[in-house]
Image (tube, rainbow, N blue to C red; front, side, top):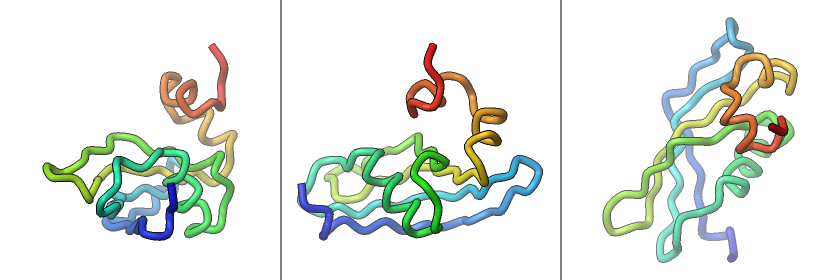
Length: 100
């Protein structure tokens, strides 16, 4: 799947220093395609915020009726240690950062 026509935009950006993370709402525009994988979204957000994909957590994506646009939530932690400290265990397991 070519990711050239996929656009990732962020809005409602908030820097949360108490939890050592940046949090935002993510809008993904993917006209004429199925829903984009979260790993691709993580890689694009990591490139956008100049960090590794390991510290980017995406979840809660909903596709609008008719397709072409998905909206979800993303958290970008400062380090993987902070992510392991504050993220719920199920999200860490989904991400592959912790093994059950």
